[in-house]
Image (cartoon, rainbow over all chains, first blue to last red; front, side, top):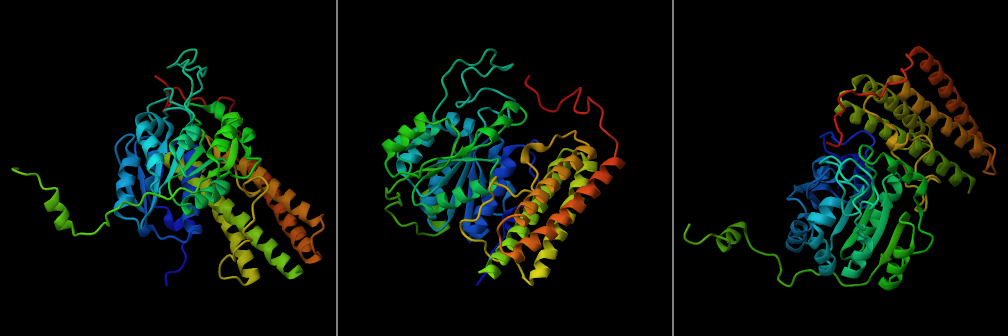
Length: 275
Length: 168
């Protein structure tokens, strides 16, 4: 029997190149802690991402990784999980990658309810491309690129996830890495599509988010299994309720055809005719 | 019961030191990436010091590794009192800033142990907490002395005429 692994065993030798103080460092540390707590092994876990600061995460873990196309992490992860249900599949994204470019994949991943854990590091800004407003940016956030604010109402990912059928919905805060790790453990254990929105400040383009640590607080009520009640709570909270907010009972989609066959057989099946 | 509480207290103390070790190591890595070698080395040094404290607790308890903490265990503030806040770094920070951070961490750790020593825990726990508070007090003194040996930063220490990241 293999000895249990520590969080550091899930961290690769690549040094993250986020800005000093970025919330994503903390999310990485929460992911590695959660995987150690779950007693998993790197060879049994895949971390799939799209594009953006947060999507660098697969390279910083020792798990299998797929740094994919912008906004398409959920599509790749869905295929992987359906073909290899034995793997624990985590999907990492940001508010731009996940809610804008990948917005449609988000809706349908919730609806399909494949057993994935979707971790979105939300900093309400496109950090990698230098500070454009994202779908979760407040309409009055004044910046050089959106003088006076974008004037566009922000997206509400937790409610959208509930309405679309996600089976587990939680909000975490990167300033509490141990709390985030505990939420991730629950998310991975819960069957079906688990959505964890992590408020992860961008210290470079949103220094105002340093106040989040004063605003974040534990959700005052236990999670519900009633999506309508969860949605009402989320729509009326202050946006900083931290914890598991909804745990549903929907059976996950597992695919109806068992994933069997050799690589050769697959290659023959997808062979281009006449090439 | 008191024996269990003592073991639990020591496990928490170990966790606190371990989290501080990991945080400083993480800070060293972040500043390495941003080519601030001097402060990265200082954080590495601080990480090693905390690792020694953690190791000493394991040796004292005769534990090969940390026993499991109770499932409900969580720090009141989310993080251990000796862990520096994650958003405390700046790529241009100087050794003075790193030591100031370390000083605040040691002071929080000292207050944490003093609180337990003055509380209602079993005598064995209170005595161990008082001993650890004294150790932390000593660390506070050492860091204060260290701070006097490093240059104080100028008022515009974080000014960068060509910042690496700005909205264009």
